[in-house]
Length: 251
Image 1 (cartoon, helix red, strand yellow):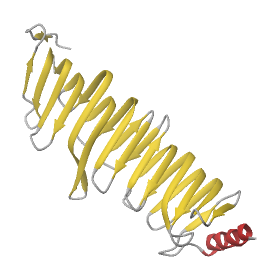
Image 2 (cartoon, one colour):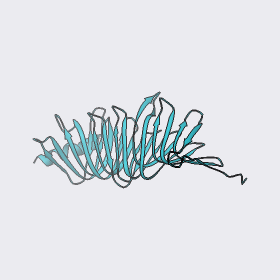
Image 3 (cartoon, one colour):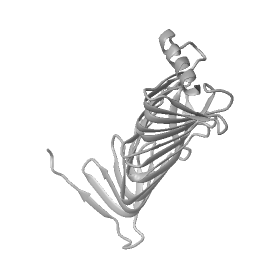
Image 4 (cartoon, helix red, strand yellow):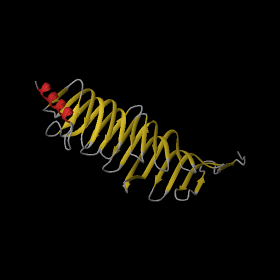
């Protein structure tokens, strides 16, 4: 009887439309409520709409505190799409989200989180802590795109800060089993590891370093780039030599 009772409530909300402060839930295969554990299961073509977020998925496990609409945490899987009230958009095979802590974990081959001026993609895993401004991407190929940089690596760890309604990167560590890549309007940088600091306006590159600007290609073991004027210094610890290739060919 409980299942039928709750389904009637959900369907009636769909008919009259959701009002501010309400949560509207629709699902094709009903709901299983676990009152003692304080969560419920929603199956097949699930759609949850609230003031804080909109989420669709094949299967949703929703944890609540007082009643069914008092959702504190979402665990979802299968064709997940998520939009928050801040305009963040996420998609993946699995997505877990805590409203209390503003924590989100997205996993799957095509994991995506779009924060407007910060776009994160990974073939494995994305984590964001929106309260403390921290994020992490982990996979064979992970990508981070900002307004002025494109970053590619296996592992990307960093922090951001909202300034004038724009999320700006504060710090960044990029690693790769192969080669990381950072691209700006005028520079393309490769290395095994890269570290960025907005406070110091510096990008450091470690091991297997290659910096390309226009017709110049400079190779070494370490590079330090000033992000304000994009001046840089490259050194070599192994061979104590830095190789410079200049192409004078006009195309």
